[in-house]
Length: 207
Image (cartoon, rainbow, N blue to C red; front, top):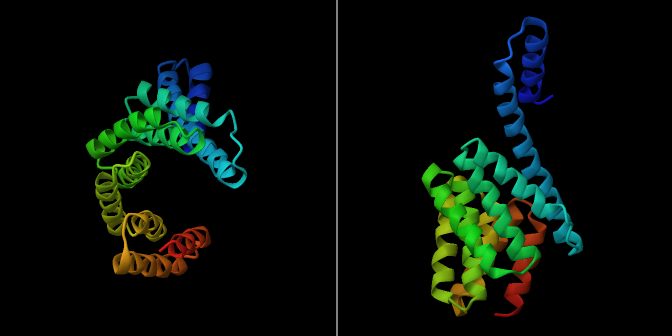
């Protein structure tokens, strides 16, 4: 059992048997935190299923929005950055809707920078880079992807580095593109990231 759920149950027992009703406010906050994290986790599972089937699940966006509302109520800025990233990712990847995607991703970036959440920042930068690429802003796209990649190298997020290098392959030419493809392939193979390997081979075929 999640520790926060266990604690809420204990605080409930104290309230009904000892009259310690003040603890119910703490219980509410603990359960809100658990619910927010569960909503993010469920939303991510649905997003993974979308990547497999390319069929939108109508619950996905609502889960991320619920998490955002809970994090806002708790004044959890780090959590807000995460929820906003997934909202932006949903609009970009599932709906193909650039404006709300960039709005949410930009806010996620700001909050992740504020809280020092480098992993969420790396995701926000990556998807802002994708948005810039789709909009034809190639220099901006490259800068954003390079910033995300640098963070991911620092974090030891090897599969994430390989995924970013795929994007950089499409923004490069000649020997540079081939070198990026070689590095990406090595990194992906080292962590068994077979889906990234397939993306690398697709990109390499277009060099």
